[in-house]
Length: 90
Image (cartoon, rainbow, N blue to C red; front, side, top):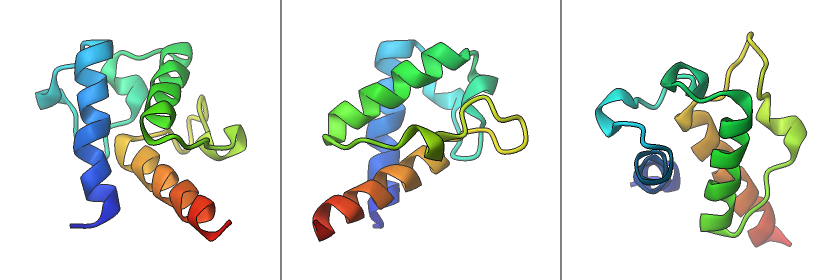
């Protein structure tokens, strides 16, 4: 199991518990704003995920609000994995 796959379950549980998003409506490729989350709530969700894994994602990597490439759960997990790798190398 890849670390992205492992994170997916944990991160989707945050959506369900803290933001009341039904897990059945969440897929890896669903843009977070399609789940009824506005841009501020997306940032709150990202912060919750960062806190869970004790990582920080640079804001410029998030692309929040960018219609051309909206943030998805899969994308967030990949960003978390990338930051975990950076932290491990340091």
